[in-house]
Length: 291
Image 1 (tube, rainbow, N blue to C red):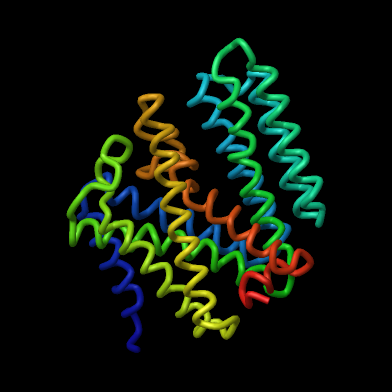
Image 2: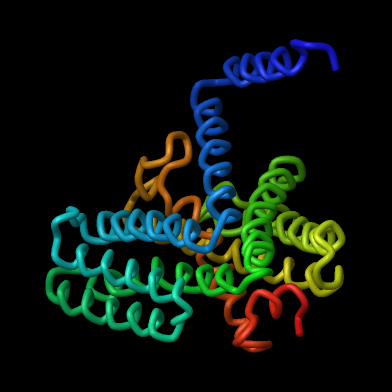
């Protein structure tokens, strides 16, 4: 390759992105940047992945309290919420997933008690489970070396591919709406396309990574894709209930952290349950190999 061509390629790519509508350009740039950092931290070590989970869990806790009861960061229930999920993340990272779950449950009860009579006590308590359980699930799976990274990557890719497949098929095929009262833009064709895309991605993942069987990971990808779509709809219903478009504006062009984590929340918990049912002592291997 002649000198200067790589620079020309990247310059042309940046010019192309810059020519897009400002909101879409912002969405692409922030999405790529955040995705690259998250992938690097996930790959590098379980310790860095724990730090990533701590940041995400704290942001989700803040968004939940702000959405459900208009709480400020200094709100006592907000502080307990954040501390509970941070403790859960640390316990999960040190191979104490059982205690991490207990921390999450106790935190949920404490937050519900603190907000009792103030408003939305049940939803406030549920927010601790919403932010804490996926952190425990992903930390537990990522910590199972040497397959922790691949298993975690598989769960994340299943959700990402589902979103892409749903968007592409929904825009291309269209058709009947899935649940217009909650999410007016989602269609049945998008749901089916997203789930099928996750299944195909699962089979390809087995082939490219050399782990597990294509049939097992294709089936698991289909299940995780379906569950991820359910998580997306659940978060949309919550926002619609409180009259919000986004959970916050923390991520330029994307809304809030919850808006990007909705499918991962449900998919990661189901993945952890599947792994636990197969082999609680080797969750990453159980998830990838099914045995």
